[in-house]
Image (tube, rainbow, N blue to C red; front, side, top):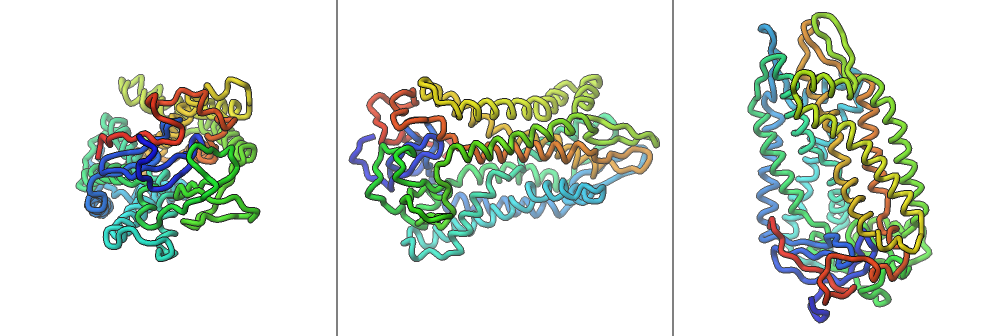
Length: 450
């Protein structure tokens, strides 16, 4: 990419801190950081029309998912039929209101808010195009900030995997029927995953407000230059001031100066709290099963062993990986990354790319541990045949959900720019760039799923 190429502004990579010039992309292209490979911006073909179409279809499928019977469960002529909302209601009935609220928020309410907000924002961008930032209403900016904060907490796809695991776990015990809402929910999951993949933060903000140039900041600077504060909401570079609780000059969002020691303290606190909750999550029963009047508790490991003995090897492996391996791996991986980030040896910068890849992996896999919580929620709602057969939530469920949420927050609070300890680290790493590319250019790739 040539230096004279037209640019949409300059921004700082949120994962390595390098300031780069954003090119004006053609539909179907994406721009990546030349140092760490982080995605800076992407575009899709016909963004407004396609996103609006997917969003409307997604809302239709959501309405169908909550309007009709979801599943039915029958044993010896006794049948139990539930809707999607019934799962949250049953958890609240058994004094697990927090788990019920978590399920309701991550599967129904937050996705509905997200899609509705995206539809409105893309409709506004389609109607008005690029407009001056002074003309953008406070409502649009606030809605855009809220939408981007909601995105990490959408767990519709995780819930679908939990449903499939639940089906296999109880298929051998009784007859299970799938209602119309189940198939609508499957389509809803596919549509919302596609819709989220279409939304790009940087591109969306450019439709409403152009980036404000800062003469003192140039491409090739970094967070170590101390001449700017990067906004994590709209990617705008802001001047450094003495104001407390400084806000972005472009989107109005709260700015977070580069404070590696403070961020590490918060991240360590959240990670240690998650490690504490990991003990009750594994020691206490995740759920209780009542069969013919006899109640039996099942821990996470106990459930995996039982599935293995019954020959359900794939499901046993899924539960073991999601509920045992992933939480432990994420806690140890984040702990090692936090410890390594505090060290400043001479060879640290050469390892920054590898540590960043491990951080990305840990951040990605954390949410999938919620599968076991969703399995419990669905089984509690579905299997309620009085003393003949019933399933109740155990005390470990809330502790395990706390582990997942706290590890996700620890990864979010952690600032990966701390891996680059000096401003010249770009010369010491081995980034995925072409030889002729410099530190102040972006990599343009063709979007494979445009």
